[in-house]
Length: 150
Image (tube, rainbow, N blue to C red; front, side, top):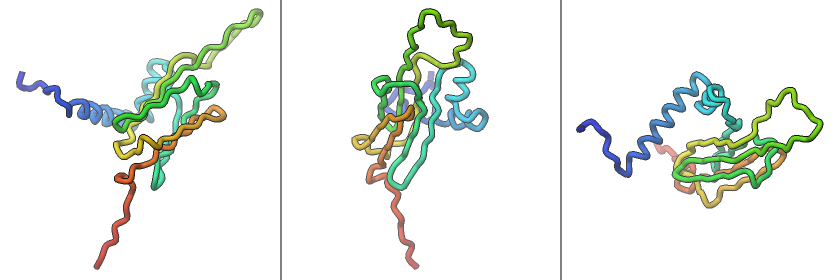
């Protein structure tokens, strides 16, 4: 019993750290844990890009064929979560599909960006099938250049 990890307020942070390290390990082999999961399960994991500037993170997510109302974006404890659902088109009488490669159903993508985000200033725009998010860094997290004196 002495080897059990006690459940404290630090424990969730510990599991988030382990999850990030596992994702980093898998990314060396498959590109990301989400990509590996998609390959293994056939689940839909939207493609995304993450860029960092001096003042913000910029995230673009490929989500073709959706309405903005079908997309949910949440940010909490340094974690960005994008969820939604792509609804299947109604079948037309007299039309027979021979191949369907489009994914329909729920999707989710989660990124850990850290605590240094000003959550009140996050912006999201959906245009031409691409979700664009701007996550400004908080003043405390902004990179500061320190002059070195001789």
